[in-house]
Amino acid sequence: MVTNAVSTSARLGRRASAGVLLAFAWTGLAGAGPMPESFAGLAEKAIPSVVTVTGAKLSENRVTAQDNPPFDFPKGSPFGELFRQFRERQMPERESSGVSLGSGFIIDAAGYIVTNNHVIDGARDIQVKLADRRELRARVVGADAHTDLALLKVEAPDALPAVEFGDSDTIKIGDWVMAVGNPFGLGGTVTVGVLSARGRDIKSGPYDDFLQIDASINPGNSGGPTFATDGKVIGVNTAIFSPSGGNIGIGFAVPSNQAKQVIAELRVRGQVERGWLGVSIQPVTLEIARAVGLDRPAGALVAQIVANSPAAMADMRAGDIVLSFAGDKISDTRDLPRLVARAEPGSKAAVELWRDKTRHTIELQVAKLAPPDKVAADDNAAAGNGAAKYLGARLSALTPALRQQFSIKDGVTGVLVLAVESGDPRREALRPGDIIQTINGTSVTTPVEVGRLVAGDGRRGAVLVQVLRAGERLFLGVPVA
Image (tube, rainbow, N blue to C red; front, top):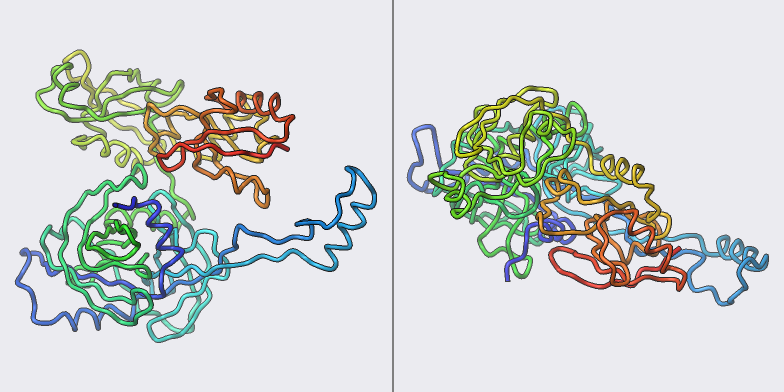
């Protein structure tokens, strides 16, 4: 069984052993050379720049003074409040914690370190262990969940050994790759393989463009760099495909040409600003290409357009096929979200369309992609959403923007769970990313529908909620406030 990248990334963050990953492609400007007799020189040169990242994470299981009270006081009884205060004094809230382990690499002698977002997501007291065994406290400069990248900063009394980002387009399929790391806590380990493929879509997000390598990548390697023989980073290792969590020869790294832009924005802004068109798209199949008069499948088919969006104002229409954006051809549907995301908000771009068996060119002004929380807040405020009051969750309708951000197919209907109130026992039922499809058997498509049904049926103390979670449908009994 193949494990998808999203769950694998999370597992690498939770179960990873302390360690690092280095990978070197045996390639050069004139092309790949023969396999060298030894990779020792490359490993010795790069290992000092690689670090281990650890951080405590709060467990979702909390023990509080209100858990399992020995007496059942009537609602509103003053004795209940007195007993609660007594219990709090005798048994304060306790929180269990876990340890996140992963790798990272220094990109600036001043102490800037790149790692994976899933390694540090939700962590506190982040520590970085250098190759010389010094340990330094790190702060998060910024993180980007869409590409699973994060930037840390440590303060050191001296300059740290740093590496540079290179050009990931220069590495070729079949080039030798060497990995050096600490998989499963076994200590320094060297493995050798090749670059297996590029441009991989592993369904972790709308901007997937991974390098695939077969050098062993195991828990503990998350966030480590992939190097070319010139000593420059051409990838950031992020995920593996595996039925057991261990290496089976299929690993993935974010290309440096994508990572460079993300890390540069994180360093300046602390977050990534992406462009937005306001369209929902789908692939152009062979049958669709024949039907619209294209000689081969290419481009991205516009399925839906958001009102008052850049696409709508430029007279883009449902049924148009986007052939190029800002001069770059759209060979595959996945190309368009990546190109638009890289566009500077406010900039103008020429878009070539296929409409009525003819090529057309329009010009539009790229807008800024709103964060998911902002989209949800706007949607819920407009709808008068009451669902959060009852379910302890922040919800949003499935807008084209959210479908694009979370890779939700057009045929999927329901209401997206964006967040659940911290400390609420109902968070054990609903989870961020769930798509609520029915409440007590009634289909829902907007937060206001969820709120109305929960308010009406919730008098019994709970509602039966059907959700779509990681591609699987399941029923949940959700308590109602």
